Image (cartoon, rainbow, N blue to C red; front, top):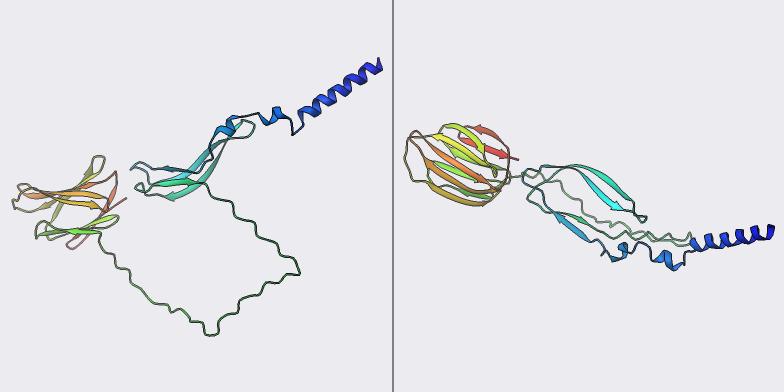
Length: 227
């Protein structure tokens, strides 16, 4: 009876050891779907025109045992929806070699006659990406995130509609003229359409996406800053 028990015990140990054998062919052939997938390199993506802040990024992945997990990275940064963003694989940095205590590394001597950098005061002057005028009583300058309108005429109203956004601006003036279009295609503006009415004329600024804007003015300068 003891002999039979001993034989069974030995066989069970051999079976368990075979399952834990790292050279077992059966174990090497498990989860073949991981082998079929090509290595990840890069994934590009774009945001819609409403997006302004990247709050976080969540990555879902599959472990070696087939279980699924996710990890989230808090970002909290502003974005420009015109840009293309990428998730890219990068190589791991090479390990820094550890020098033996007997090895010395000579240090570079500082140049005696090294030049000191002068602190120059610079003035940043913002130049428009595009400037244009159709009539002599109004001119427009387009910057990256704003539009300047210079005119002596009184502004009556301004508002925005639509998606993509159109900014509508009315100025008081009793003057008739034909409707004209100023093609811009830069600074997030597609075009500006001028049209006259009985007591005023209207500008319609066509933007390339959905925006909100802030309005400010000083003397004859009207500024529309959009975001």
